[in-house]
Image (cartoon, rainbow, N blue to C red; front, top):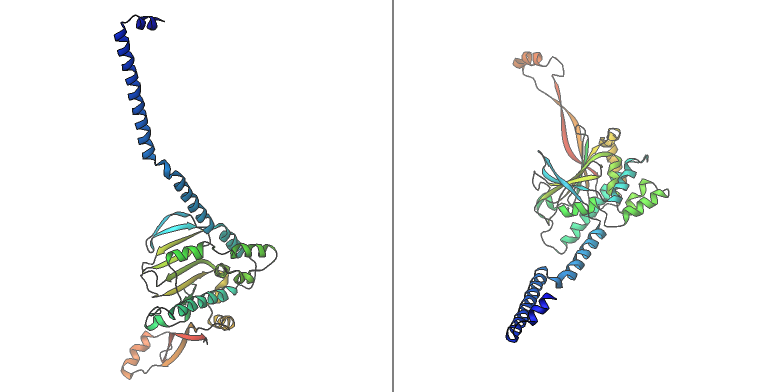
Length: 336
């Protein structure tokens, strides 16, 4: 009431001037508010928000569909260098639990699966060589073959092929996740009474290695990558990937090394391996070489002058013979 009385008491000229000033202030304030709102909208880029949301949703859906493993941090080993740990995809964990805890007695099926996988890798590189010149390389690297090495001292069994090999991404995808539905199908079949021997029919035969091994190391070199990579797991829900500090020693191909369980050392015996390889390579079209050892007795000529001193040094006997153990590649199964 006071303001109204006070304004109305002003002279007419002053009242009109005050009203004009008030309207000007209101217009200026409105302009400043609109300008600030426009600047905020530009910085946020409101028009792009739906597109960004759609892109993120699509990316999340793609990752979920691929079943990509989750990195679990970096690991450092003095011999291996810096690597990265990953969690196995859930279905792979279930599959490995089934295999590790299986009471199935025919553990030899692991060799059948590894030979079959090596043959597939050799088939792929041979097919690629039909259209890509130089893909096979030269010399030893160009030979399409498999080799099997049993090391009794280290208690390891290695299967080596000169196939297509795998990159780091291939190792993660093929050995850490399951792009195909094979794992789920096998788990379902196993729950209905199927045995581990059928694992190869579901495309996940590699994991049968854990029937006989505590730890598995996969070294691989692909033509698509200058580096050679190592995948390793002890079936503890994780696997590690790191660059091979020895460099690309394979040239091309894959080496799978099994660190055998104590109750599976029979698979280091030459005759046992030879019989199994012959049995499981019936339909394999590539040569398989088994590294063998043999003892050779050789006579040693002893000079009359040195005979006395040699007898003192060789009190344990066998002074007229010595045994050499030679390593050689035996043809366990020559493919067609």
